[in-house]
Amino acid sequence: MKVSVITVCFNSGSFLADAIRSVAAQSYPGIEYIVVDGQSTDQTPEIIHSFEDVITRWISEPDQGQYDAMNKGVGMATGDLIGFLHADDFFAHPDAIAHMVEAIGNKSADAVFGDIRYVDAYDTSKVLTRRRYGPCSRMKLHLGWHPPHTAFYVRSAVLKSSGLFDTSFTISADYDLMLRLLAGNGVTTAYIPEVLVKMRVGGVSNRTMVNVRRKWREDYRAMQKNHFGSPLTIFLKTMRPVAHFIHAPRYLFE
Figure 1 (spheres, rainbow, N blue to C red):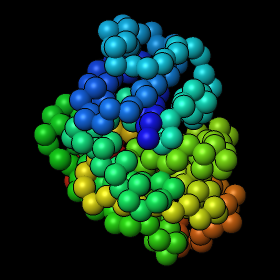
Figure 2: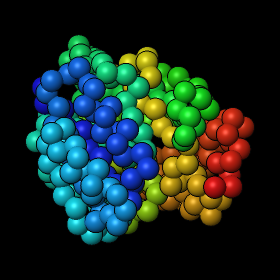
Figure 3: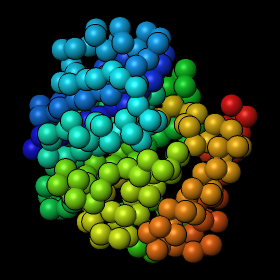
Protein backbone atom coordinates (compact mmCIF):
# COMPACT_ATOMS: atom_id res chain seq x y z
CA MET A 1 0.00 0.00 0.00
CA LYS A 2 1.37 3.38 -1.02
CA VAL A 3 0.70 6.19 1.48
CA SER A 4 0.53 9.80 0.29
CA VAL A 5 1.48 12.32 2.96
CA ILE A 6 0.66 15.91 1.98
CA THR A 7 2.07 19.05 3.59
CA VAL A 8 0.74 22.47 2.58
CA CYS A 9 2.73 25.49 3.63
CA PHE A 10 3.16 29.23 3.27
CA ASN A 11 6.04 31.08 4.91
CA SER A 12 6.50 28.05 7.17
CA GLY A 13 10.27 28.28 7.50
CA SER A 14 10.27 28.12 11.29
CA PHE A 15 9.13 24.51 11.61
CA LEU A 16 8.78 22.94 8.15
CA ALA A 17 12.11 21.13 8.36
CA ASP A 18 10.92 19.27 11.48
CA ALA A 19 7.84 18.03 9.63
CA ILE A 20 9.91 16.85 6.68
CA ARG A 21 12.45 15.10 8.92
CA SER A 22 9.66 13.23 10.67
CA VAL A 23 8.49 11.91 7.29
CA ALA A 24 12.04 10.94 6.35
CA ALA A 25 12.35 9.05 9.65
CA GLN A 26 9.33 6.81 9.00
CA SER A 27 10.07 3.10 8.91
CA TYR A 28 7.36 2.37 6.34
CA PRO A 29 8.93 2.23 2.84
CA GLY A 30 5.94 3.02 0.64
CA ILE A 31 5.55 6.75 1.26
CA GLU A 32 4.82 9.38 -1.36
CA TYR A 33 5.54 12.80 0.15
CA ILE A 34 3.95 15.84 -1.49
CA VAL A 35 4.58 19.47 -0.51
CA VAL A 36 2.32 22.25 -1.78
CA ASP A 37 3.78 25.70 -1.16
CA GLY A 38 1.79 28.89 -1.66
CA GLN A 39 4.80 30.68 -3.19
CA SER A 40 6.42 31.54 0.14
CA THR A 41 8.64 34.58 0.50
CA ASP A 42 10.67 33.37 3.50
CA GLN A 43 13.17 30.51 3.65
CA THR A 44 10.51 27.86 2.90
CA PRO A 45 11.57 27.34 -0.77
CA GLU A 46 15.19 26.83 0.31
CA ILE A 47 14.12 24.27 2.90
CA ILE A 48 12.07 22.40 0.30
CA HIS A 49 15.03 22.33 -2.10
CA SER A 50 17.32 21.02 0.64
CA PHE A 51 15.00 18.03 1.19
CA GLU A 52 14.36 17.10 -2.43
CA ASP A 53 15.66 13.59 -1.68
CA VAL A 54 12.76 13.12 0.77
CA ILE A 55 10.00 14.96 -1.13
CA THR A 56 8.46 13.00 -4.00
CA ARG A 57 6.66 15.92 -5.66
CA TRP A 58 6.27 19.59 -4.84
CA ILE A 59 4.91 22.78 -6.32
CA SER A 60 5.23 26.42 -5.34
CA GLU A 61 2.52 28.69 -6.72
CA PRO A 62 -0.20 31.07 -5.49
CA ASP A 63 -3.38 29.48 -4.17
CA GLN A 64 -6.76 30.53 -2.82
CA GLY A 65 -6.03 29.49 0.77
CA GLN A 66 -5.08 26.37 2.71
CA TYR A 67 -8.01 24.23 1.53
CA ASP A 68 -7.35 25.04 -2.12
CA ALA A 69 -3.73 23.99 -1.53
CA MET A 70 -4.88 20.78 0.17
CA ASN A 71 -7.11 19.98 -2.82
CA LYS A 72 -4.11 20.49 -5.10
CA GLY A 73 -2.17 18.03 -2.98
CA VAL A 74 -4.91 15.41 -3.25
CA GLY A 75 -4.97 15.93 -7.01
CA MET A 76 -1.24 15.20 -7.13
CA ALA A 77 -1.44 12.15 -4.86
CA THR A 78 -1.16 8.65 -6.33
CA GLY A 79 -1.19 6.71 -3.05
CA ASP A 80 -3.76 4.21 -1.85
CA LEU A 81 -4.05 6.07 1.48
CA ILE A 82 -4.00 9.86 1.81
CA GLY A 83 -3.46 12.12 4.81
CA PHE A 84 -2.06 15.49 5.79
CA LEU A 85 0.86 16.57 7.95
CA HIS A 86 0.69 20.29 8.65
CA ALA A 87 3.91 22.26 8.35
CA ASP A 88 3.98 23.00 12.10
CA ASP A 89 3.38 19.36 13.09
CA PHE A 90 5.42 16.16 13.05
CA PHE A 91 4.97 12.43 13.39
CA ALA A 92 5.30 11.29 16.99
CA HIS A 93 7.49 8.27 16.21
CA PRO A 94 9.04 6.45 13.21
CA ASP A 95 6.39 3.71 13.09
CA ALA A 96 3.33 5.98 12.87
CA ILE A 97 2.56 5.30 9.20
CA ALA A 98 3.47 1.60 9.49
CA HIS A 99 0.96 1.23 12.32
CA MET A 100 -1.73 3.01 10.31
CA VAL A 101 -1.22 0.72 7.33
CA GLU A 102 -1.33 -2.34 9.57
CA ALA A 103 -4.50 -1.20 11.34
CA ILE A 104 -6.47 -0.27 8.23
CA GLY A 105 -5.55 -3.61 6.65
CA ASN A 106 -6.47 -5.65 9.71
CA LYS A 107 -9.86 -3.95 10.02
CA SER A 108 -10.52 -3.73 6.27
CA ALA A 109 -11.54 -0.15 7.03
CA ASP A 110 -11.93 2.90 4.79
CA ALA A 111 -9.95 5.19 7.08
CA VAL A 112 -7.63 5.05 10.08
CA PHE A 113 -6.82 7.51 12.83
CA GLY A 114 -5.01 7.77 16.14
CA ASP A 115 -4.36 10.26 18.90
CA ILE A 116 -2.51 13.58 18.80
CA ARG A 117 -0.68 15.64 21.40
CA TYR A 118 -0.54 19.42 21.56
CA VAL A 119 2.98 20.52 22.46
CA ASP A 120 4.76 23.78 23.10
CA ALA A 121 5.84 25.39 19.83
CA TYR A 122 9.47 25.80 20.86
CA ASP A 123 9.86 23.06 23.47
CA THR A 124 8.15 20.07 21.91
CA SER A 125 9.01 17.88 24.90
CA LYS A 126 6.46 19.94 26.87
CA VAL A 127 3.02 18.35 26.40
CA LEU A 128 0.19 20.86 26.82
CA THR A 129 -2.82 18.59 26.33
CA ARG A 130 -3.50 14.87 26.55
CA ARG A 131 -6.58 13.43 24.90
CA ARG A 132 -7.51 9.87 23.99
CA TYR A 133 -10.01 9.96 21.14
CA GLY A 134 -11.28 6.38 21.16
CA PRO A 135 -13.17 4.67 18.32
CA CYS A 136 -15.56 6.60 16.08
CA SER A 137 -19.34 6.37 16.48
CA ARG A 138 -22.34 8.36 15.25
CA MET A 139 -23.32 9.08 18.85
CA LYS A 140 -19.93 10.68 19.51
CA LEU A 141 -20.27 12.72 16.32
CA HIS A 142 -23.62 13.99 17.61
CA LEU A 143 -21.87 14.98 20.84
CA GLY A 144 -19.42 17.22 19.00
CA TRP A 145 -16.57 14.73 18.73
CA HIS A 146 -14.61 14.05 15.57
CA PRO A 147 -11.26 12.40 14.79
CA PRO A 148 -8.19 14.65 14.70
CA HIS A 149 -7.77 15.71 11.08
CA THR A 150 -3.99 15.63 11.10
CA ALA A 151 -3.93 12.00 12.34
CA PHE A 152 -6.70 10.82 9.99
CA TYR A 153 -5.80 8.90 6.81
CA VAL A 154 -8.40 7.74 4.31
CA ARG A 155 -8.35 5.50 1.26
CA SER A 156 -7.80 7.54 -1.88
CA ALA A 157 -10.82 6.14 -3.74
CA VAL A 158 -13.11 6.95 -0.81
CA LEU A 159 -11.78 10.50 -0.42
CA LYS A 160 -11.95 11.36 -4.10
CA SER A 161 -15.43 9.90 -4.56
CA SER A 162 -16.70 11.84 -1.54
CA GLY A 163 -15.48 15.16 -2.85
CA LEU A 164 -12.60 17.25 -1.64
CA PHE A 165 -12.42 20.26 0.68
CA ASP A 166 -15.15 22.88 0.23
CA THR A 167 -13.16 26.07 -0.29
CA SER A 168 -16.13 28.26 0.65
CA PHE A 169 -15.03 27.51 4.24
CA THR A 170 -12.02 29.35 5.61
CA ILE A 171 -11.57 27.34 8.83
CA SER A 172 -14.01 24.41 8.96
CA ALA A 173 -13.62 22.63 5.63
CA ASP A 174 -11.90 19.76 7.45
CA TYR A 175 -14.89 19.38 9.80
CA ASP A 176 -17.25 19.54 6.81
CA LEU A 177 -15.26 16.74 5.16
CA MET A 178 -15.32 14.66 8.36
CA LEU A 179 -19.12 14.95 8.55
CA ARG A 180 -19.46 14.08 4.87
CA LEU A 181 -17.28 10.98 5.25
CA LEU A 182 -18.32 9.69 8.66
CA ALA A 183 -21.94 10.83 9.01
CA GLY A 184 -23.11 11.08 5.42
CA ASN A 185 -21.21 8.32 3.65
CA GLY A 186 -20.80 5.93 6.56
CA VAL A 187 -17.06 5.48 6.07
CA THR A 188 -15.68 2.74 8.30
CA THR A 189 -12.70 3.54 10.51
CA ALA A 190 -9.95 1.82 12.47
CA TYR A 191 -8.72 3.54 15.64
CA ILE A 192 -5.14 3.19 16.91
CA PRO A 193 -4.84 3.93 20.66
CA GLU A 194 -1.49 5.67 20.41
CA VAL A 195 -0.15 9.14 19.66
CA LEU A 196 0.61 9.44 15.95
CA VAL A 197 1.16 13.17 15.49
CA LYS A 198 2.34 16.02 17.69
CA MET A 199 0.92 19.48 16.96
CA ARG A 200 2.46 22.76 17.98
CA VAL A 201 0.11 25.13 19.80
CA GLY A 202 -1.43 27.93 17.77
CA GLY A 203 -3.53 26.57 14.89
CA VAL A 204 -5.41 28.96 12.59
CA SER A 205 -8.82 28.13 14.05
CA ASN A 206 -7.92 29.08 17.62
CA ARG A 207 -5.32 31.80 17.31
CA THR A 208 -7.66 34.67 18.17
CA MET A 209 -11.15 35.01 19.58
CA VAL A 210 -12.23 36.44 16.21
CA ASN A 211 -11.24 33.14 14.58
CA VAL A 212 -12.88 31.17 17.38
CA ARG A 213 -16.20 32.90 16.68
CA ARG A 214 -15.74 32.40 12.95
CA LYS A 215 -15.14 28.71 13.55
CA TRP A 216 -18.36 28.44 15.57
CA ARG A 217 -20.29 29.88 12.63
CA GLU A 218 -18.54 27.71 10.05
CA ASP A 219 -18.93 24.53 12.11
CA TYR A 220 -22.66 25.23 12.38
CA ARG A 221 -22.87 25.81 8.61
CA ALA A 222 -21.04 22.49 8.03
CA MET A 223 -23.63 20.70 10.19
CA GLN A 224 -26.50 22.33 8.29
CA LYS A 225 -24.90 21.46 4.95
CA ASN A 226 -24.52 17.80 5.95
CA HIS A 227 -27.92 17.58 7.68
CA PHE A 228 -26.26 16.29 10.81
CA GLY A 229 -26.10 17.53 14.38
CA SER A 230 -28.06 19.93 16.55
CA PRO A 231 -27.52 23.01 18.71
CA LEU A 232 -26.24 20.60 21.38
CA THR A 233 -23.63 19.32 18.91
CA ILE A 234 -22.21 22.77 18.26
CA PHE A 235 -22.28 23.62 21.98
CA LEU A 236 -20.39 20.47 22.97
CA LYS A 237 -17.95 20.82 20.07
CA THR A 238 -17.27 24.36 21.19
CA MET A 239 -16.66 23.27 24.76
CA ARG A 240 -14.12 20.59 23.87
CA PRO A 241 -11.23 23.06 23.36
CA VAL A 242 -11.76 24.46 26.87
CA ALA A 243 -9.28 21.88 28.14
CA HIS A 244 -6.74 23.28 25.71
CA PHE A 245 -7.35 26.78 27.03
CA ILE A 246 -6.90 25.59 30.61
CA HIS A 247 -3.58 23.93 29.85
CA ALA A 248 -2.35 26.61 27.43
CA PRO A 249 -4.21 29.90 28.07
CA ARG A 250 -2.10 31.80 25.56
CA TYR A 251 -4.27 30.10 22.91
CA LEU A 252 -6.77 32.86 23.66
CA PHE A 253 -4.41 35.72 23.05
CA GLU A 254 -1.99 34.76 20.27
